[in-house]
Length: 273
Image (cartoon, rainbow, N blue to C red; front, side, top):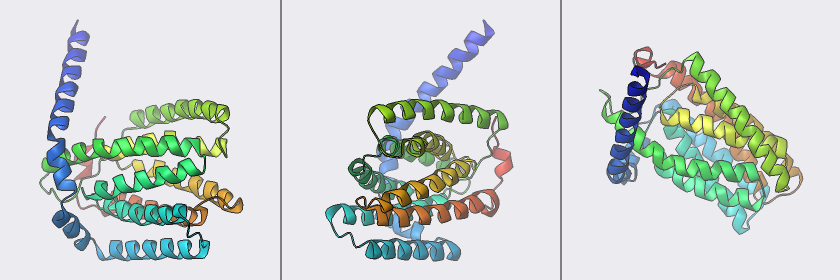
């Protein structure tokens, strides 16, 4: 009986929190898309982060030029690269306005994935696009509850929770692989890893867990391989996307450093089970 009451109480709390998040979404959206806040969050980045962003943008543009793909898909690939870079840099420092760039990036990337018939990537980007709005509400709420509301504080994931997410990733991989085979997708064994890794990374990111970077680094390494193979086959926007993947991998390593070692916060006090 006590267990049933505890379950009902937990479920009721989750439903109330979900309702509050939905109600607060318009307010959170205004904060995310505020150009004043967006400009300020870019201006107040660390010097090393600004240098990282500049390098990533230059590499992305050079990759576009060397690829010589000036078709509509090529320009969409460039737009994807630029918006992803800014999004990732803001995530590195836990800045709320990362989601405004993330929405644009996901929509542009989804178009490129559809063109290249990458079934796993299509599923991943669709999921990421939805998670942008979830992240907006959760980050807005969590940051408002912190002493310093300018950056989200990273948290530590328990071993049990980590094992549970790993098991879920394996299950989702098997499901995506099955459908990729049915739909005649490209590079299905690699491509099928993108959605499970994206789910784990996105959920951990939305909730502010540092372990998200393990998923992102793994995903970025696989994406580098996928887009290198697409480039060899002269696929649309492949050069821009490969350059973007290399940039994202470098950023993931930098982001992992900042979240694990560079945040001047009381992280261990926020550990959860």
